Image 1 (spheres, one colour):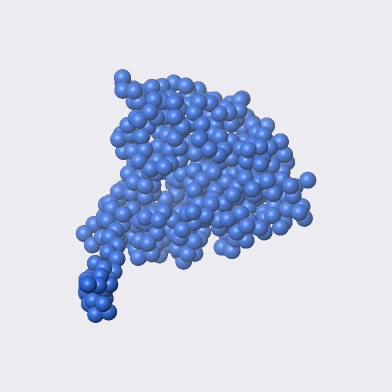
Image 2: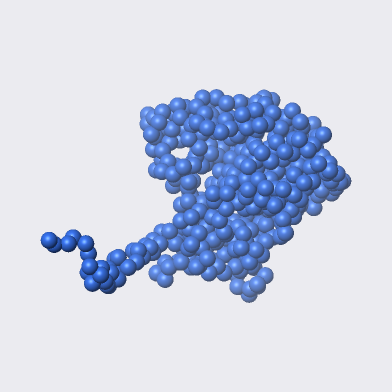
Length: 472
């Protein structure tokens, strides 16, 4: 009889054969990142360092340790391998510079580096691949003077910085401490809590403070909703008028600004949230992105959260005010300066379009001012800035809604009992843990800033619920 049991000699020979076979001995080597991935990663690093250093007052080492960690996974392993050079105008006074700050990040031996430039009035701009010495200044109708925070700082809070005395209820202190200890997940960098227009809680992580700007990410979308409201009050825009994407018989010509503000354009996007990496970090323009967008749903029939919807809505604002006001000064003159947001800068693409879906830098106190402005129905110091009823418009659901979680109005997320919060609560929120929660029934504004890593989001609903319990 022949035995089918393998002998020791056979097993030894088989093991030796397996060890001698490279495919069996180790997993296939991971693919090297593409040139495009390295290019976008370099743009991410250039723009993030530019904003953190020049807008936010952070050091390069601080930003590389926090703002550039926990980022999109396809870029996270690449970013630390790229070397950034930060240049200030005062570093080389003999070398003519068109900007006050410059960040360059090489990523390929055969291509120019990624370049981000900074000025006090425009913040940072990322450019298409162009040799640094050939990058033009953004086309503008004349230089807008830099912000001078001191002009408004001498006024009383909330417009200015005078008279701020923070009296925190004892029960609120451990709730704030819990946020910084990771008790609601995420990496908290700042908290400001306002009740009845007064700051009742404020705290910051090491390296941050009341005047440290951070990128708002999608909180900027809610700013866009407010700016379009202002333009509507001025008679420049009709949110229900079609033709903001195209003016011909193409179905995209039926899209209205209201569709865009409610994330119901029907425009296609390849990724959740319709990420616009080529625009945000690759130097493309809003016009580039809008030109290639096609429909895959009828306008007004589907909710799909998308950067592009807000970008196109703000592009319509640019076209509407072209002959009425200097576009580059519009956010500052019409909103930010009027309510004391003097350390808030809206940035633009290389074609001069505001990237008001994400690329705004602001402080926690400035965002608290924005929350107060919303809470007071768009009125500031007796001056009506938003149209009567506009906050109701921004906080009323209409048409398709998200499948799960909070509802959506016109650029604001809608919270309530389903999230453990009072009816009528709403929030602006952005990537990496940026939140402005407004709870009208308690006259509360809760601002939370963070640099959360992907996969570890901050629980704003639970934090807000615990704040409510701690506040008289």
